[in-house]
Amino acid sequence: MTGPVLRLQGICKRFGTLQANADISLELGAGEVLALLGENGAGKSTLVSILFGHYEADAGRIEVFGRPLPPGQPRAALAAGIGMVHQHSTLADNLSVLDNVMLGTEPWWRPWSAREGARRRLLDTARRFGLPVQPDARVAGLSVGERQRVEILKALVRGARILILDEPTAVLTPQEGEALFATLSQMVAQGLSIIFISHKLEEVLRVSHRVAVLRAGVLVASAPAREVTLAQLALWMVGREVRMPARAPARARGELVARLSRACAGQSRAQLREADLELHAGEIVAIAGVSGNGQSTLAGLLGGTLACVRGEALFLGLPLTRPIAALVADGLARIPEDRHGTGVIGDLPLWENAVAERLRSPAFSRRAGGVRWVRREAARAYARELVEAFDVRGAGLESPVRALSGGNMQKLILGRALRAPDARVPRLVVAHQPTWGLDIGAVAHVQQQLIGARDAGAAVLLISDDLDEVLTLGDRVAVMHEGRVSPAMAPERWTRESLGLAMAGSAVAVAA
Image (cartoon, rainbow, N blue to C red; front, side):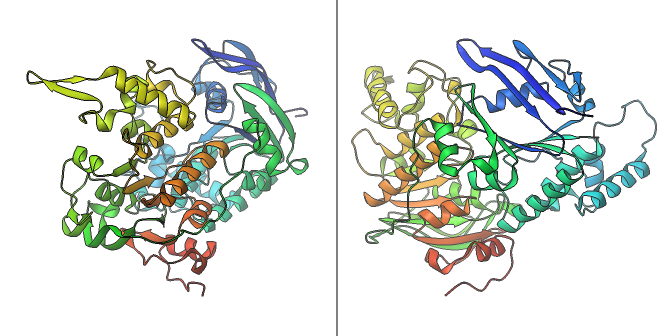
């Protein structure tokens, strides 16, 4: 066909008083990669959800291959040739690759399954796009990169000709990322069209033909990728110049704050296996690794939510077995990986979330007659300080915190962790994926705050999938693979390639 394969015209969507999308018009050509960019809360997810049928637009229309797309119908989007690969795997771990690809493609009342035909289609598609796969392999045993390969094949086998990739390299090693880029080239060469959503601006310019930028629900820019710079993209996204933190070594390493000695915790592949690690005041120890290799267990152990099965875990010379409230009072600051699930309570107002970890402290409550009474005005005043100091936007103190975008929610959690009501500097900061899924402006803010905590004397443990972040912020860098922690060394002794190999479990020759 001539003309665009996808056309969005005048798309509008409002949630209450929030204008999520305002009169957005976009086109996607055959064999084109369109990068969709924007801050957290800019309207990208809403627009993609409308395209995929999860939401219905208040106004506007969508055409796919010249035909109107019925609104609010995911089945219609799939039938029209639109496929989506989400940030996190949606595969069933207990099923084989073939079973996952077939899931939902056959009517439940059919007395037989056309497995051999499905197997042939899967292998043919895998050969066509250079995506090798073992149909009978159980998904639970696949690496993150292999799972993503299956997700892409699942969409292609079902006839996707327009593919939406949401943060596709967020949890990949550098080597897996390179393999993905090679796959995208093959897909585009064979006529597929791709909408590429990412916060990594370097890879956006590398893989896309055109960029479209949303800000506050409005399309503010659309241009060929070859005609824009990283600085221009950041300016369009945020509306101001963004300065990322530069490599700044620690001034001096102070006292030992926390120590793991042959520590074991957790279960299965995600367990921690005989970990040795020391965290000193005034330094950032950065842990790299592919998600699911024990990082959550490490964060839980040092964050006081998991206990050692064997070995030793100490904070300020004492075992990490005290109640969470006591650990927080002693200077433990926690920035959890799952900000929605464990970082905040979505239905509670912003001010209650701001004091959630310190509600029993005298600053925010008192006991009288056997009952603990909340000092609401003090709590609200503290929350107001956090909102101003950490630039939390998008909701009032009384609004449910789920109304915040991901970036603003993370700023609130960061402020709660780093700014105690008595202004004391945290002794230990456990930051697990603190910038995951954030836009460039929010990333710069979070990273600068972690550097500030280090320079004020805190020991910081940074667990991140982002190698640029690890190498920029880490005063010492270690790698986790299958629950084991490598020795922590100066970042200059690592390269991106050696880090990627270590993340994949290979023995590496560390750069001198």
